[in-house]
Image (cartoon, rainbow, N blue to C red):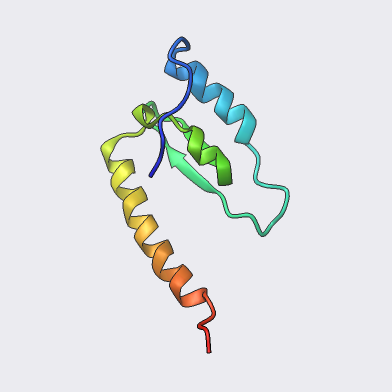
Length: 87
């Protein structure tokens, strides 16, 4: 699941701005997948890989969470199809 981290002393907007600055650009290697996650305050977070662990889940609205669950299900099916079967 998505873990909640981040400083409680900073307002949400400051935490988001820091994250946006860290992960704003598309990954340098074209083979690295990334996602755009809409936040409750109307901003969009572009992130890849380990950055997902740093998302403050309080910044997500319920519609976004449901879409993430649906995407995880679809990606799980895709990974199952793409994984070579042992012979």
